[in-house]
Length: 514
Image 1 (spheres, rainbow, N blue to C red):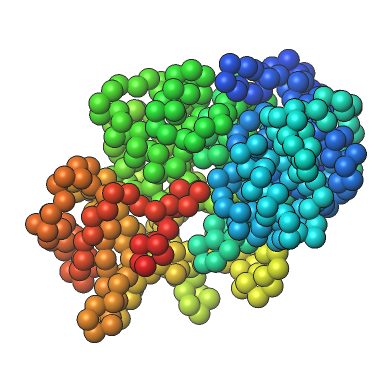
Image 2: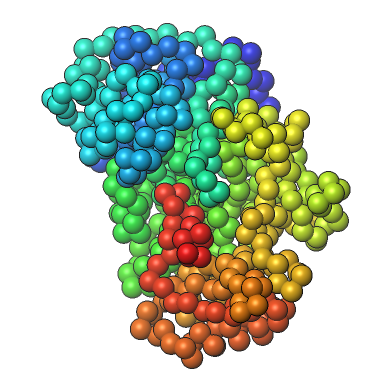
């Protein structure tokens, strides 16, 4: 494997290196009806970097991006890292209180935002001691208190030397999903990113310069930004991006327009695309594979996707704590329902409550080791001590490993339900329900019965909403009872129009329980 030098800047590594290796004229980015070459992106990135430096942004300062997917997002993100500052980002459809949290938590000196978000940022920033500048993308005269991103970059120099950063300098923060509270930032270094790229993107996904990536999740989400943009550039490949929210129709349109070879996907969209293809045939023949992450991909859904599109899906799992994916399926070696094997360069073990490795086939907590592990959690010392333990990261997730080294997700540590003294993984019940033809999506939680004892409760989104009835609820409960251990069947079945999900596509089970 390529040796990571002590002094390295990941923006230069992923972006500038393409000019040094003769790819300056190659298309790097597809956006609407425009293409951007690597040379164009480097020059635009340099302009943004010089603007930020002129505004007083220095190495290690945090800058918050609140942008829809666009060339401005791409060049701003790389520019922040190139000048040695720290890139942080947030979804562009949050509330003022959420932006106030991010501003206070990151202590960002500058924010780069879309026009529709800028006013929220200004309101949120009124109480911030740190925020100095709000740059607005897409408006020449953005109004009092704002700076025009276009006007400033148009007048800036396109020559910029990358900051002489150490491999272990912080380049970015990634945020936890916030499933147990407010999102926590994990400071990640230049080394963390490049290490995962070399092992996952190069050795598992086998990215090459002829690839074109397309991502379902938006670029603020680290999974999408890395696999759908940064890693593509690292391989000299191209990325296709779009600013609108992702819908199945939009994804089909993008595939047919740009002919990507790699689709960065999530189970929710996989399900929607399969359902949409029942009524209209779509051409996805350009794809050599799709990835899936964010939540476990049920074997039944994997099979329906393969039968519908004849495109391989490489389910994987990663986390902010370990930068990106550390377990993944591989082309030609997919085991449906599993999240694959250990990514090269990483180690994984499954431990019981006493810290002993469990035999293959038994469930326990997954621990992972690799040089992409972050530096901890910002302002969460006790939580960091429990998670980052020496070279190992305690993921808190329950897994089992089979005799062939494939890992199977059992459930989040906090998700597991204790029924009659026996632990039950909601995922097992959910996967069973998904095999019933009436079920489109589902989520299972624990709910107290009349005696205060927890029992499984199923929330079901039907293929046909009109089919909802007490009789169907009883049928689904019996369906589970006949296929799993009897104590695992859902005592209650609730039909709902849709499952509440966060901005990363994960089901918000706490909202179902209230």
